[in-house]
Length: 245
Image 1 (cartoon, rainbow, N blue to C red):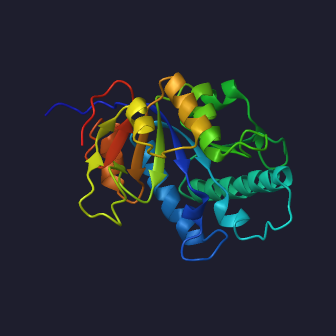
Image 2 (image 1 turned 90 degrees about the vertical axis):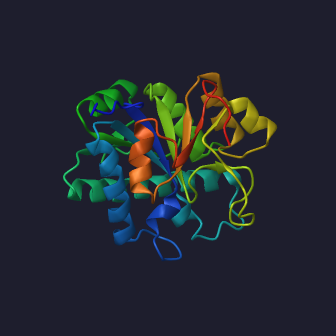
């Protein structure tokens, strides 16, 4: 039997900060962090070079932002992603996976500053790199951070982890007959108003031809199969595919 060939050899994984809170209302749940780390390790064990961007909603949404102006609130959110990145790093290194955290806001005592060539070199050496503190600028989401960093490190795809196994014609929770796309183009996503990422992030991916793979991170086998081009458990957004429902 022929050995399967990886379709993606370097990926950027976009994670929600809420994946770290487990059953808690907010904060970091150690069990959830360990579970997340195990899934990331599965990707790494396939020989894929992995970088991560994780949100901060599990921490920042646990605070009252009433009366805080937008710029300050965005910086608070960036710092929340640093906390999550350090928690994820600790969980990964408990599994003996070498990991580096790089931040867009310099804080030398806890992480490296973001340096593109160093990040690429870490991945080439088999280390997982976690990008934290967003882009270092307010008014940009972690989706935009993921798209930007994916471009900078020459990632072959962005794996966007969600609660559903891909993109559907309608909300599958509300409409059980909704069909899942295996492949869809950027143009069709825009025409159908499918909100996969925010506009800035989506534009960066489209302009630079970076495929977006939408998947359910709980489906470990399906996630692994996606690395080899089997999209039976996810959706590929790219201009190089034919539209399938």
